Length: 302
Ligand code: NAP
Image (cartoon, rainbow, N blue to C red; front, side):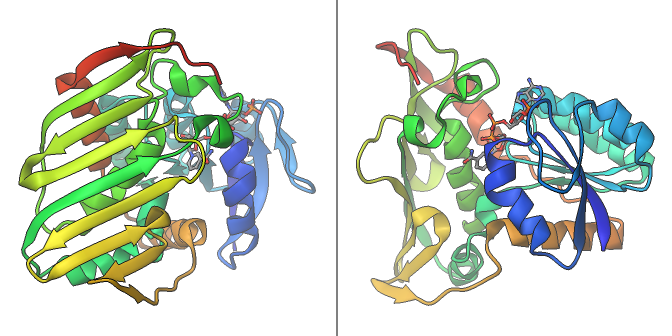
């Protein structure tokens, strides 16, 4: 087993990272770093530098902080010769992730920009089915209730928090994985509440007749669905990629689950001395913020 340190013991660390690490034969959760959070039975640091200095025996660090503070932690970890796993989105800007790629290469350590939704059970079979199809269009319908899923997480509406693209980038990570051809943004409309620095909803149009509706104000039933139209019929990825339908019929899919798959992949990368970095989902978010028409809407409070 390889010792790993988890940094930022908040919602996703508790919900997904800790169970995935504890359920894996590859990893031993050897330490945590968080100002407030801890994990029972695991050595807890509140200071990252202290952990790096006192635990040189931990070769891998997994960063579950929000994107804005994450870069500094990643840069320090790489400088200390540790392999680094980044929650999504991999950074607050693309340039800082490019900088981390160079640092990791120079230091000879692994950098993994994880995209958990790409590990959803339906994604790999969807990609395989679409590989030789002629795509005529696709639609993303990604609508959830931010108050339900991100209670008290005000950083999502602060600069770098990405707003509705915090969940929306999961859809972008899936569609950029499954479509056999690349797509580029042609237009976007972004709704910014007048008291927020990030959008709460977005409507997007890409090349190849790919469209997307993202909304963080959805009460009642939640939607995390992608449909792809082909000359051989429609493919549907439902519930964040966990369910797959091809030409109207459910396809039985199975797998390790999203976070266990991410940690299995990280184990492979460390073992083979390689990195896995893909910024394409973030490119589409950056393009939306570059090209999108901004519409101001009523104030929103979590
Ligand atoms: P969170 O609970 O708000 O934050 C995670 C932890 O990061 C906090 O508990 C906090 O720990 C630490 N932190 C926050 N701001 C910090 C700062 N400025 N400096 C240092 N540490 C700070 O967020 P989360 O929902 O877990 O999300 C974290 C990342 O995971 C995001 O990039 C998000 O997109 C991704 N993610 C979230 C979900 C989800 O459902 N929530 C799902 C998938 C991926 P301390 O205060 O104890 O230091």
